[in-house]
Image 1 (cartoon, rainbow, N blue to C red):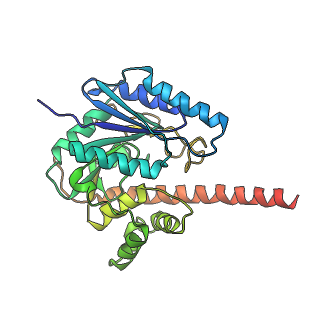
Image 2 (cartoon, one colour; image 1 turned 120 degrees about the horizontal axis):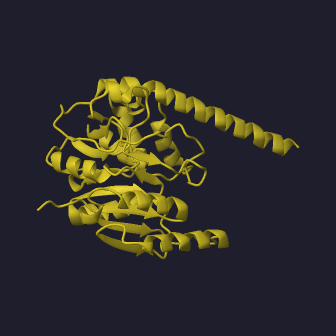
Image 3 (cartoon, rainbow, N blue to C red; image 1 turned 180 degrees about the horizontal axis):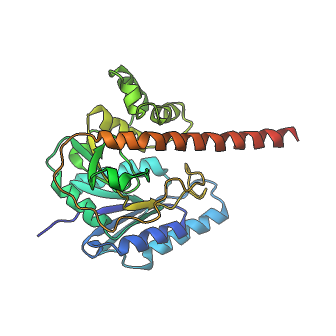
Length: 310
């Protein structure tokens, strides 16, 4: 009998997003055969009445339906923050089950997401080099025509993903050590930054200085240093619906959206090497995104200067 990977969902104070995420997940093939853990983070100190109401609304949404075969809800009292919640929750579940599928409260999945994830987890379970399964792929031009249905790419795209205990055990959470080791690699910084088209190293530096507290770049750094591969679909099975200024690290943009998600993605044996074509297609997309984000940040700074001088 087939064993399906447990799903873990991390939520806090976005009830509308959480409900959309759960509704989409419940429509997935294999949802009726899967166990879902929902980790509700605890309340921050001095939380506003408005946010307290949203936190309670999220918990009510989680209890609203039998979203999957089994739903286990963890309502924490103390607030851990997203980074610590994900690291602790994923660690707990991979230690118990050996594998896990991970979602956050702003990810809308297609009905084929769980099949793809479970197929990939089963297919690559014994392949030490494969460390991460991504359900998301960037909406780059000609992606479906130029790339095979599945391919390997170095970055751990974390909008709907999965891994195994054997890979997660290699997670390094010390940003300073990650940066130092990447800097010592031959051409490490350029490769880590996707041929200098993305700012991954800056994210590590901002974690070191305390400007941000994130987990995903540390997971990517850990996979990168171990020469790991990350499986991706050529058409995304996930859309991030949180780019509406409702999230901690997400500004408003539609640049990451797919107009239509893949209904299904077939997992089959492919060479265990990174796709050069994926890198070639992604570099101009990253340049466009970084340019767009820079322009918005500059406009915001100019508005702030205007207010201060007024």
